[in-house]
Length: 344
Image (cartoon, rainbow, N blue to C red; front, top):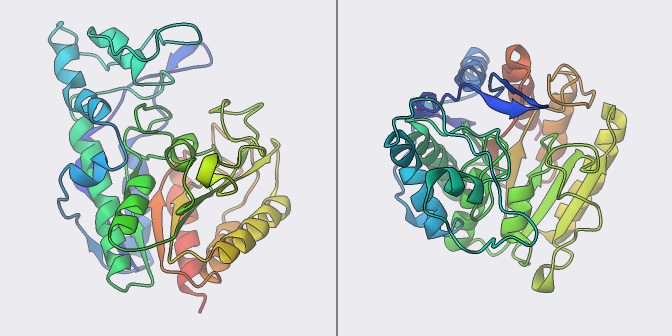
């Protein structure tokens, strides 16, 4: 399995995020990708290649032009005020405020284009996130060209980013950009399977009214877990997309047998949909030792996850999302890929 990786991810290194009432070091750090890459090389998973350059067009097929301009210019606006620390929002438009009028001042724009204070913008953020999207697109090209599977070692991750907002360490939705690209290149039906601990709210929002991309999420119950405001079982799409969003929320403390039951059901739904290509948003923050998650999967369990996905028999693009037990992230993520590769 080819892995696509870019060193440019290191240009995004936020120093602080607001969590549980205090500013803490950001859990999403460059070392995450470096450890996964090291494990890919250690087990000789396959060739590691750099990304191609795809330009803005595939990004603009998913994200709004004004949001993309914001990401491109936010640091310049921030630093123009003499600020050298990370850019974080502190005010957001909510119910009965004017949510459609884009403000001019950078503090207001940060709130307008975000839903949390966990996604700091730094001098290199735009370069890093654009490269991350190119990583996903390059891996999508590998699958489109006939490869059984490819691994996009994306960082920053993407599944919390919607058409016009960032959050949850995510700025551009890599999996959605790749899925849309595959559609634009001729795939009539694409499925996205998100196995991250946190609900992929951005991916759901992007494809919610559509029947050409099936979005399936296995995640912690949003009544008690981030991102809180999407991911309930009764959210099933709207209009033409009704029935093409599937959510499997689970309680804190869920262990592998119960989690695997949901994956089995989800895979049957994907099989019935009959996608030409499968995109997997690969989060491994379901791990027992993850510092910001509450599921109880063990490292060997991820081999079984890869095996079950492989039995779908679809060309598969794995796109890296979350996982914050940094020492184990390489083992856990690559176990999924090895489980997939070892299953005929």
